[in-house]
Image 1: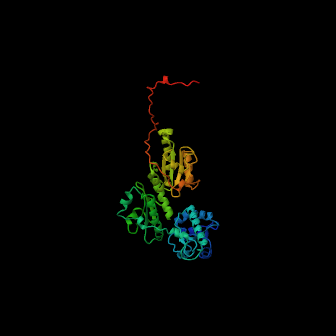
Image 2: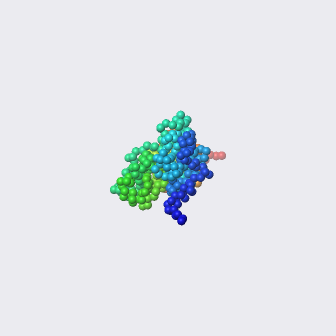
Image 3: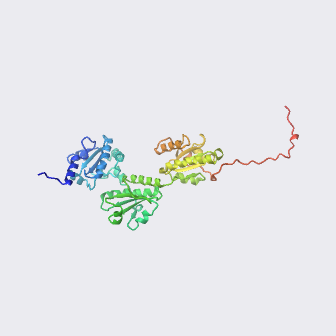
Length: 443
């Protein structure tokens, strides 16, 4: 008589037979028999995934993990442990969820939890950073061993104040989040959750930085889902931590980025810039305008436009329209934008090397470093775009600002938006002059 196995058993056997990683992959299959020698006694940096074959998130990670392993081949070791088959290894490293990734760096006995994104690019950037920290440790004599952890671990344990994270409850959630014009990133957590505890300092540090950089327009909150179960149920929270993004008038969406401070801040700033209007193009009317704009932004873009008599209002507005388009395109950079008329701020022109090439001209100024870069191409959308793109990648030549300080700024009247007018000359009355009496010189 043929025995029919239960479907669950068949699926489990099929998953085990299939395997996740094969010998042809660059991912090293780790087991209790080789883990100690391959990883713990190794001088190499290891990234190890602890997974279960039946785990959906693990299956999603598998192709990215393989790509990362291939990219890091010969540089960083990448391994994987099947915790269904090797439960003792999972227990040894307190694995309570799948997939869990750990970084075995300078101190192999105290691996660090990987908190970054789950794409191959994120994994490779994190691996290179961890490798750089390991090399620094060795150069400074802080090789393997010891209980202090690596620089990578210190980077992950970023400090932050809980006061910047808004505590959200069943009672205040709708008023603070749903009725707000601000963007919210909300963490749903459980106090007993290990991953939540790892996220806590990163979340707090990100909250402080985001509040400062967005002037409070993007906020980070947290909900204890074990206490406020109404909220947890409303948003279908089934695992911890779960992070959701709330924007007014839109359905909440899951945050799927990395879980380091840097990852969270980057996503928050993207959300801020997507919802922010284009920066204002300010005319340089006095010293305060320049100081405020240049000191509060990483870069301030300064344009010197031709005199109004040379272009008229239509020509000037055409230049300002180009600047507005570029300011909108690069608004994620949160740069400041300024303009002045040729000749109105001669000291500023001199300090930035403007004037010798004609007008219009443009410079990007870093007031913290007192350095600037000049637009060498055309004052057009294409020319300015190429100039700003190079700056955004950290490329392009720079020069020191003359005098290493913002020069004297003249106080001037704002442009009235009209065409320029030539100065009126006094009429000369020649009616009482007897021209016939003027003696003529003979040739």
